[in-house]
Amino acid sequence: MADFAALFDLELMSILLPALAAGMLVLSTHIVLGQQVLKRGIIFIDLAIAQVAALGAIVAHMDSRLEAMPFSHVWMPALFALGGAGLIAWLAKRMASELEALIGCFYVLSAVAAMLLLANDPHGAELLKQLMSGQILWVSWSQLLLPALVYAGVLLAIFLRPAILDGAGFYLLFALVITLSVELVGVYLVFSTLILPALALNQYQGKGRLFYAYLVGLSGYLLGLTLSATFDLPSGAAIVATLALSAWVFRVGLRQLKPSQTGMNADL
Image (tube, rainbow, N blue to C red; front, top):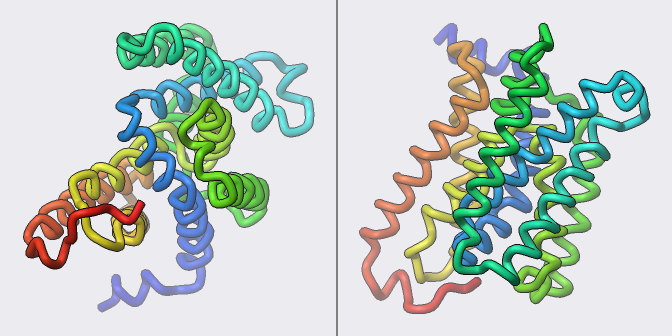
């Protein structure tokens, strides 16, 4: 009972609420974009763009002049992410049959570049860990304002013009979203939030597909944050694990529904 009561004390809630809000913001766009990633069959694009955005943050960190510029931790990763997305969009038109392999190579080269840049930095290991795993438990309310505005704009664009997801505009929206998401939750959670809820519903053809996908994500974040705060676990790793568990439970559970309950056509 003591542990349960401690979970809801004011100090802990002041940490959990901004973290949960950050998770919900990330989910708001990643659920839709993740389904498009599966549809296109470019699973590694999120890892690649997230890693390139992280590389931009590292480059800004390495140059004291860049680091001193206002909001360099946002616009520098954004420039790298947009450049990476533009390259992938170009490759998609010219080397479509090998695109997934090329995206995988792009990710590996970006990761290696990050390691080489930080090899002689005394704080390099900590920065790399922060970019990969994120620090969602330490997100503040003020950090959520810019992502909230950008994500709202992205969702509005998709609502007003759904076809934007089928063209090159998808890569632009993807790069913008991923840049801000890496800053909030780290590369591992960006990938997991995009892929796991979409994968959980990938074979489900009934009604409420989008609702269930959001429910998968929200369940994973709630459980992961609770476990992280209660047992002092790394927050990013805990949420990735609980997102995977949530996705598996929903995928198995929905498979047990009768055909008459699932229907034949997805509502997305």
